[in-house]
Figure 1 (tube, rainbow, N blue to C red):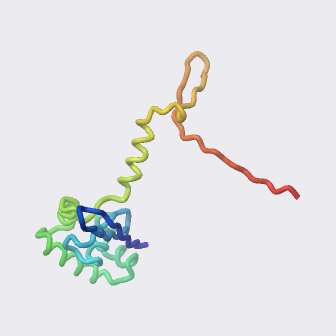
Figure 2 (cartoon, rainbow, N blue to C red):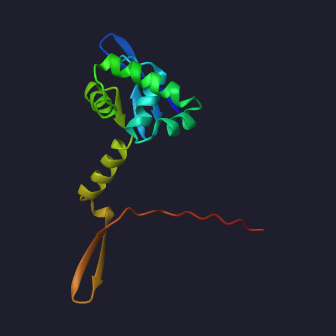
Figure 3 (cartoon, rainbow, N blue to C red):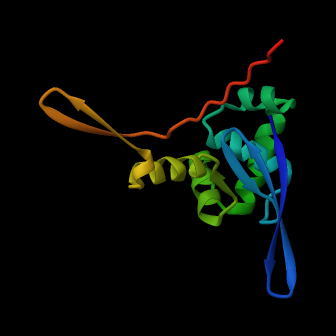
Amino acid sequence: MIVYFAHQEQHGAQGMTTVTITFAGFIGFLGRGAAPRELECLMAVASGMTSKEAARDLGISSGAIDKRLLALTTKLGVTRRAALVAEAFKRGLISPAAVLAILLVAHGAIVSEPMTKVRRSGGSESKIESRIAARRVEASLAA
């Protein structure tokens, strides 16, 4: 599934709109030198898909995938797919969509708020676990 997203940022007196594409676990940024279809193909390759797998997911032929990747390798001045992905990361064309999830998990591991700590006594030693408390609200209808 491909998701297009427009995000408006305020820089000085004028606003700047950033349009992104989310596909195959990556976020691609439009307006940085790559066409939308080229970005989709690049993100598919970055996720480890073959041309045939990417073609199936994008609904085009594998030859079209190879042509889009060739156009992008020419634009970025590289000759191999691995170099293409590395250069795309370096230029900020794509980034992993999982970065936000990793930040949230890392924050949860580092945080020392007392509300997330659960104390348990386990025999001779005391154990402290960190967990997020889930509040469950159940509604029952009285007839």
